[in-house]
Image (tube, rainbow, N blue to C red; front, side, top):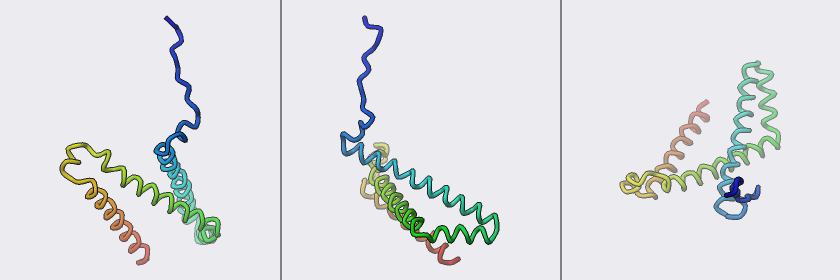
Length: 128
């Protein structure tokens, strides 16, 4: 009997061998952009507490083309994350729920919820 058990070798890029795993890793990588954007917003809150001059400096920084590009890329990544999450959700629901509600109804409800929340946030932002 061997004292050393067999350990199957695994490459560092194991997820690149199958398209499903590749897309999963891309989906999970989108969270990095969301994290960086949250840090950016937190920096804005800190600048807001430091006074009007600091806040205006942060706003001027946000108006730079690189920050606008970062914001657009982050929005795209977040929408990709949401769409893939919504498409995955019906498949991971418990079986008793899937028997009661059809998969396409769950997807439509999630997209409707996203639309409602987005409209509420947009209305609040425009009202200010």
